[in-house]
Length: 362
Image 1 (spheres, rainbow, N blue to C red):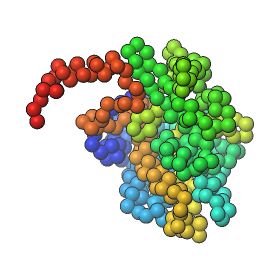
Image 2 (cartoon, helix red, strand yellow):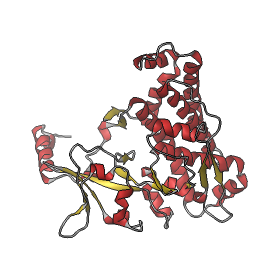
Image 3 (tube, rainbow, N blue to C red):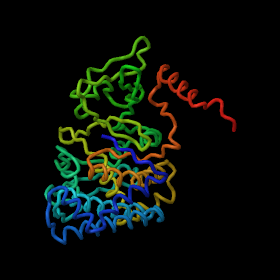
Image 4 (tube, helix red, strand yellow):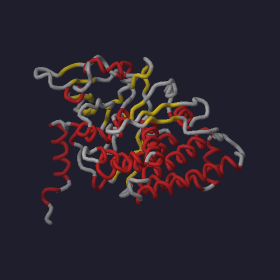
């Protein structure tokens, strides 16, 4: 379910919604709706305090340089995750550590070559949050993650990732939603999957793909698009960029198993690695931000921007169990990415003619 909220400032609006839960009475009312009566004061105050502190960390990261911004944003994200996790579960979740550690790449390697190793599946923050914000995602099964593949899993970084990492394999596939008069389907340009070793074999690596789509087709005669048609009673398994463009999320293979972390968990892991390297390894971080010539610094700056915008939105989605889309209707143009049919265009023109649109005098 998609809920549209019209606002000229999405970032401010999402925090207004979150800051409602910095007031004990609002937290108690939320619990009452979930039939949690008389929640303990330390639970309520912990939620209020975590979200309040998170907002300050987010604000501080926005005005800080790249020297410390990743660390501040990681702290803010940890606090926000903790507050919302306790709100959703109605209990104080025990967390004793970050739940992951990193290995710094050798000198001369990319920042994206940082390795993240999950640990402590019981009280590590990574596992606790993953268990709350996702289902059936065994993040702590011993697999090692590269920062590169986490960046590759973020829809809003897709275009920059393709440019910056020429050898990088994306873990999101852009999808066009085609709406015609009597049918809606999706299509993928073959170039969007050409970096995969077995491009057409990548679809089984998309979680729940075969449960929701019919076998893939090609549109004749040029065969220039892969066509995806829905099964009856199919569910939307895509993830969305801020612009509303849909992507299919490709699973990662860890220890022989397919693992598909939700977007918020991938971003959480990436923030931890960046926060850790700038805090504990300035001998690596400082030269990088002063002299990067590869464009990787731009990727990281964009990632931090999207982190501030997307993560609060994703946690609101988890809290309310719906996809909340903050948009400004006045400035939202017709979405031409969905290939409007001739009939749709004619209908739009007739509608505007009926309003006298083309007869108006400026």
